[in-house]
Length: 293
Length: 301
Image 1 (cartoon, rainbow over the protein chains, first blue to last red):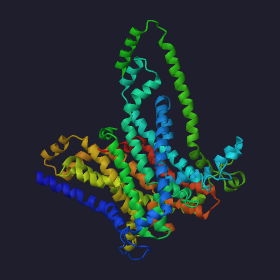
Image 2: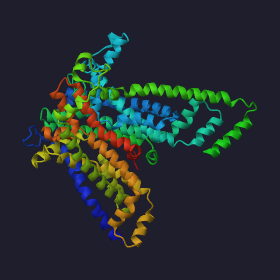
Image 3: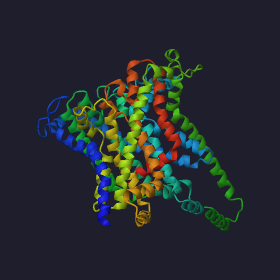
Image 4: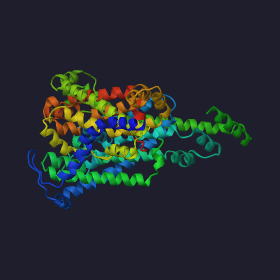
């Protein structure tokens, strides 16, 4: 009986294993190998050169700039959507009439692709006829108008705004799901005890949302670390590579300058950073937080 | 729920001697709720401005956009942009390619992830924990890490600039999420279900197909909805693994349109709307499943 069970387990695992190794494990290992080679042309050969790309990287100001951008990007993309999503979810939970419709509207950005989101925000940020400068002009704040995506000082933040806009929906969805599981009895009891709404929020609602926080933060973190589409669509990393993140640097090194070895090295660094960040976060939060969301 | 309400009412009566005391609180609460609702409404409109903007633009004629700007409301609405996106913009080819990639890749990843999830949750061979970790670890691999070796692979085996790379990569890469969601689901299915099948003399594949899967329908729907959206919206793989216009999926197609008609915003907007319709339709039809999928996918066991 038991050997038959093990036999079927192997049969069931065979095809998934092949597909997963072919699409993920194999390429992942190869990236590490290529990072140690001088492969730098589409048809070219890959000769072993040890850690040279990594020492090169340590001296590459573009790498450090991309690393800094990725760090800021991830920090903002975790904090802002989490707080905004929480606020919206708390507000939406109060809505009794037309709740389904209103919720659906707020969830909509989640189904939009980042390419479309990036394009729409590109239009909002256009200097001549973009919505933002139009509004600023109407209300007499001409001095605030900018070339939002071509001014090196603000371009990064403009793209980040567009990113956060979409991520708010994600946070809201998870928090709303969490809020429905907050025990009504606890809330009622705190009302009876004369707790103010703020006290209730702080002592009853927020603590019971802990698992949702863990989920929102880990999801936004993973998404932020690999974000590529929206930056590519809105600025392609420009102006003057000011909006380049690590994910974009990998793409640029590989498919614009064909330095596949160096690009692989950057991708390995991105992978290690992702693992460490997520690992630290998981170690910091409770395991139980992920059990029942 | 109603029991608690009764309970609180009696307790509140005991506490307050003045009978009119609860009234102001209820009023304040109602006022607070109205304030929250109106705030939400204002915020909601601001929040959705980008979406509304692109839909309106897609119905404005290009001369009018050139004359009055992108964001000025317009009286005349036209469907010309959609015709143009279809005839000059290749929208038909792009959309067809996206379907040809998304449907098989969604099916493959869901089927394979279901197999792994079932093995580690129900057959439980030795080392199931490690098997789970191995398959789920892909969630933490940024796609950029896989890009270069895959690019080389598809160049060598002649699949570059076809739809196969996206099907293969999404089918394999999606196993991680699908394994996670299905394992978590199968763990909530009682073992007795499988054992009853065994006693009836059914084989393992038969039990999975005719006993377990029917129960798993909601989880499968959630997962398929989620995977469909992810794969449809993907931009990076088709950008890197295809080159010719005939092989582009719609997300990359939007951008090539940007290159061709640099001022035809109306046409671009129409293309963006067309590209978003399938995921919107799936999202509206399966919203409940979609949300269940996101929250379930986030669960780490």
